[in-house]
Length: 639
Image (cartoon, rainbow, N blue to C red; front, side, top):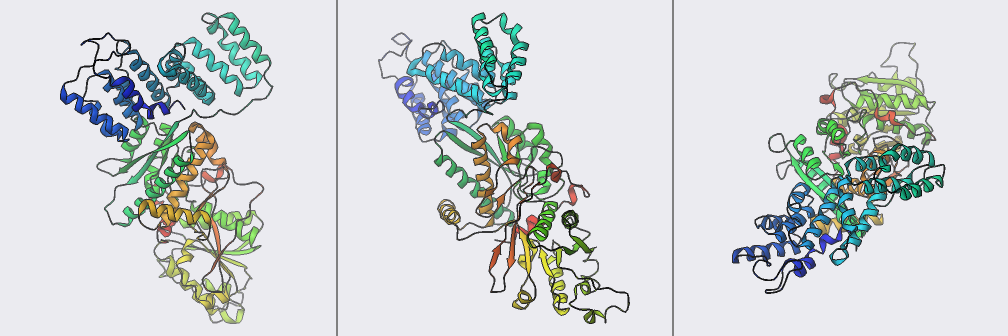
């Protein structure tokens, strides 16, 4: 039995201790009217009803009823109920009201549950002090053994920073010494020696010299290099995950997107909890608005009330920009699933973008064009007045870094020109005779170009791409066409497929034939009652990636350092690969085939030296207000 499971076994405890049979003697109390808990008839009914709610896992309702009763049993179970929904402040308030003058078994159970609450709220020193007291003396139902087991698990679980914090929080010299002793397993000999020598004067006044001598001998036997990087999480640990979604009118597009994402998160959590015996995910869902619950207030609640380990949301770049500083202030990793603005992530170690930014997309397409397609002469067409211009700029920079030559770079406000491209497309004609009617200049030189990257987005993107392709068809161009998600919405006729090789990158791509996708669709249908759209797939992928990562890390404090170094996650609709950055670098590259509408995926070639954190420190040439979610909006149309 893991330590946390004692909460779920509280029903057994209730019947054996908290609800004595009429006339029986409660352990530690005298018999007679002063020894028995005295309820009037309505109180008994309330307690019975509250206990039934608790057994049915309706913890909010149980806590409300238990809180109405002024008995040690009710206070204990109110604390357990609040703990079971991660309302740790109210749990601690109730549990601390159970005193030693009450039934000793109630008091010990309250102390144990309080230790769990302190652990979940990162008050590690206080938690360890409570457990040390419980494990050091006999208690009912072998509680002291559970306390000793949890005490040792927490000691091995802590990071170095958490160990230092626990040392400062603890008021028990033996616990402080144990923090040092257990920490030796994760230190080199030099590190351990420095720490022990610094603390030796402190311990000398409170700890037996024989114990200190044993620690000293152990340090002498440590390896010169650090040992195991971290220990296992305590059995039964709860990982609290915040979910931020915008308040939306039912039936609207935003409401549909939010609903699908949340159902995907929920399915991922249910699957995780079913697959684990000693770890649990608990979701805390909040809908935010500018009037009722602001993003700032929601982050404060997630931090102070639920002590969340990570937050999925908000959805888009403008909202993510508003809370990026709060993520760092509260030191809570935040994962906005659709935000793709370049300026959100600059120098923020707690923000992780799943939807690749414009700049990341440009670099990825350049690597694909040069490394995979072997194109070494390129051209670019982009919209100078939109954020997508950064995608085009990074494509050019990366292509040139890889040794390709960018012959032409056209960056214009095409909407202001009524989408006129007649001065551009002749540069890609099949031969000079086809363009002589457009250029009288005898010095005009038609330079061969192998690949043309059409980097456009927003409302006029489809019209612009269509006009460019029409002209290229007329000029009998054989240039390879490269594009982004907007290409998925273009009418790619058989004539166009015969004339051009067309490739484009996309964030979403379903592999409908995979076994994982098949199981996901069936499980989602059972959970939600409708077929999953792209956003349901994405919600499931984002949540599954996060939950698996936390489980592997054991300690959620390691998310900040380790999430960006995770191996590639192969999802049901998208892959996630941060490659040492805070921005997902993975995109699908699709080839529009000649035979019908079949799509073939080409994996991007890996580089020997993948991008470093510089990817997230890119230029911010527009302010937050200009960072539209054009990429996310185009994805939104792919249901």
